[in-house]
Amino acid sequence: MAEAAARLNVSTRTVARRIAAGDLRTQRTSDGRVLVAVEVRDQPVEAQAIAAVQATAEGSRQAALALADALPALQRAYEAATQAAGQAVAAAEARASAAQQAASWWRVACLTACLPGVVAVVGLLLGRAGTGHGADVLSAALEPPVGSEVTAETAVEDAPTGWRPPLLP
Image (tube, helix red, strand yellow):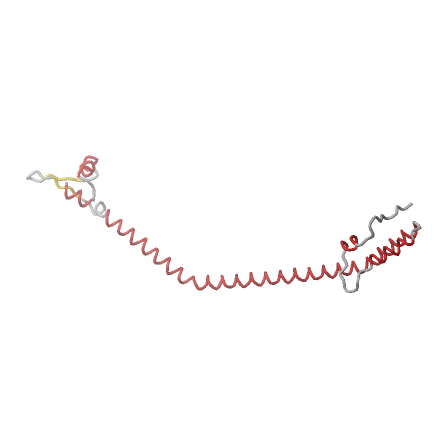
């Protein structure tokens, strides 16, 4: 029983339990010893473990080889994706710059086209209210110095203090 326990890598008590359960066959010799029949399928607990480890190692080796074979293709795909992303960012930046430039031209065009009309309307309103002098002051205040940028904020800030537009009848 001790040899069977050693071969099966279990305790002698486990061997005795397996004999009692009928899982192991025994035979008594003429001198009183008990022989335990250890079948080949019962014996290789260690061999099964070794085979499992070897299979796992072989699977890992195969996976490593497959990854090594796939690595150049993955590297090319990464580089292509990086290049495409860079091109997309450059195109988006170019479109944003063009849109910003177009918006600036529209602002300048609107201010250029609208400012004389606003001055004329204000002048008419002031003239209609009978304050011709106020129209001259307002026109002079709204005329920007040569070479300066005109914005709505500077036009309002440069207006005469205390001036209010007249109410229309």
